[in-house]
Image (tube, rainbow, N blue to C red; front, side, top):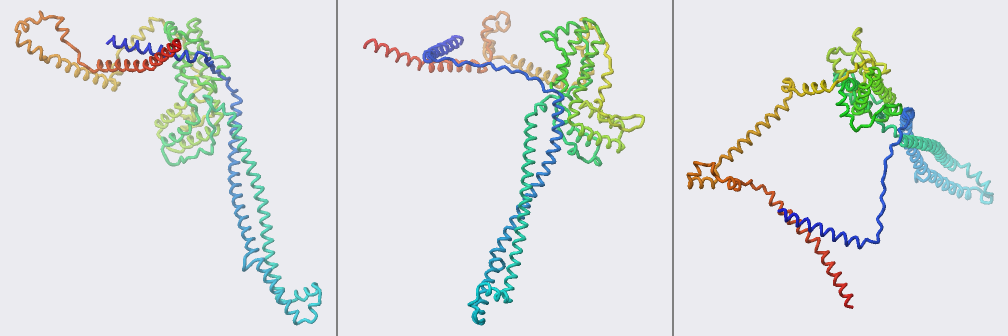
Length: 540
């Protein structure tokens, strides 16, 4: 088996070597193209005040854009109506000018026919009428009642046409003014959107959230349970509170700093890590742009503990803890300013519902506590004295005062204490074992599976093979003294069942050989032809 693998491997190496030599000779005059190493340079975060101004401007732009959108919609409707009116008047004017029954053209034709009739009558009845000039003849013609009637009729039709033309001119003026205003608003809206898209880097920061309109927060609180209200508010809060903020709680920060380790444990954890310090610039960026994860907080706490083991300065260690609490509070104030009106709106909704409904105090307290802990913001407080819910003024998260006033007492943990603590933590706890149902199920499954395996293995081992049965019937001595059996023979007679792996290995080896031969054939043919050409040249 090893020989087959070795032979196939040597064929592949030889073929690849020959192919590389041929390719190298063909490309000997080609110069390899250079490659570039692209290095990513992290840009400095945009200033926090600039981002807040950006969101404030965006708020104003949103209101302006909404007003513009409403006005644009009104103008579009007005322009459509004006265009329809203009088309209707145009059709009416065309009808008054060309209708065969009632129009200026029909009135003019009737007047012309009447004038011809009256003219012929006057020519026959009135002596010397034909010798009169046109002006004198006109005087006779207009005195006829029939001509007067057609003149009146023509004047009425022309008056209607003139009125419609005047109305059409007014509509055209209104249309042009509305069209100009529409183009102006669309240009303004396009500029606002372009300006927002060019300065949207602030929206990508860890503690930035999209701006929401408080007018959009509308739902009925008269019907429904507290759970229904909290479900609706939860959907809103998911958009108002950054995920980077809500997934790190004040309690977690406190527990991390309150967990002391020994020097040996700290050295093991901090081995190979660079010294992390929360300087002024880093603090500033972590307050709005960069995410402060639990891992970052743990690293800061570990380094603070290392310093504490050196100087045992409780004040310095608590200062590091309070700095992280303050940093989390600053993160809240950043994204709160983006949607201040919406926070106040949902606070009013929740406060109104809690005080207007006679709720179970214990259940409502638990539900509100769970809801507010999820987002690390207290919208409301329960006043025990008045038995009413009161609003948070949002000068803080509501969690800040509780945790900023906590003082952590430093501890020096020795290696012996750490080892004993680890030993006690690894001891079995009957209560935990009983509670861990999934672990018990897995344990029972493994035990049952192992018992089945053992039973099947022992069952197969106790089955006498055909060779042993025949040997036992022909040799009683061997049956009485099995200890004298040849060990080497027994070992050679025991073979593992064939799982198909050896056959697969042979097939793979044969495949490698075939591939190697296929790769070698073109190279050998080319070398043979090349050799023949050289011999032919020498003969010439």
